[in-house]
Amino acid sequence: MTNALATTLLYNPDPMARRTAAQDLGQGGCASSELSSVVDSLVGALSDPYIAVQQAAANALLEYEPQSVSERILPLLHGSVQHRSIAVDILQQLGSASVA
Image (cartoon, rainbow, N blue to C red; front, side, top):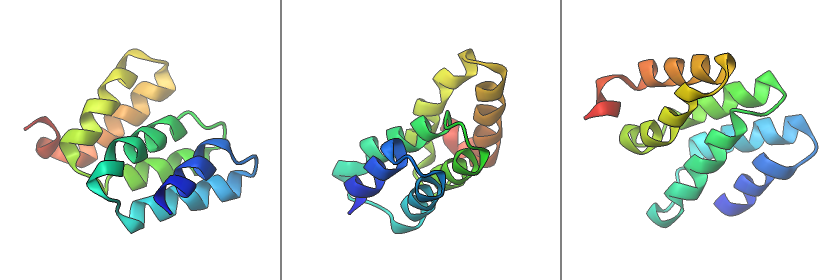
């Protein structure tokens, strides 16, 4: 189920389906073996052209282990202004646990 949601998040042409997939990934949890691919998919969705998808992905990332998320978010600090802003917001919300 998690892999199907990640695929929907990255490839479905319907932005509402992508937003729903991001929301579901933030609520459902995942097996430890899927954690990396799920977090990578959510980070990828931060570049979605639709702000609702970006916001859903950012909110979903807050539900995962802070260290794992922060490791994948840090490269965004070297991207566009928009990516830096999203990364800073997520890192602030993760708090000190993200740099432990």
